Length: 123
Image (cartoon, rainbow, N blue to C red):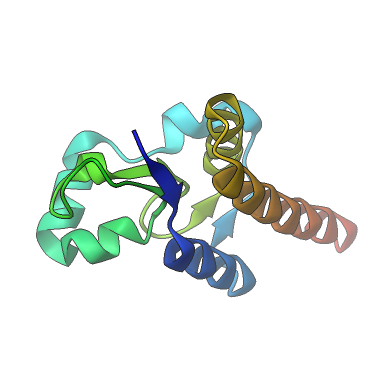
């Protein structure tokens, strides 16, 4: 399996975070916050695979472009970047030694943690 960083998704994730489209949620909340299969299917039907790909930090070249299996390491709910999704992707990328994805997720993790700290400081 050849999984590589989806550079355009990473840049979009950075822009989404900078634009305020993020959720600072707990580490173990991804199972509750990740899109359900039916939500993924609806999203693909409405927006297509290019937009679906933009919510995934990994691309598996062994699968065709018009398949959900091609896109790995989701990080959001199709509206906002979720800290828990980034952390789950970071952990899984580290386990599988996908260094480029691990570094990208670590960068997003740092951005979100800095914003979370800033948010709490302004309360």
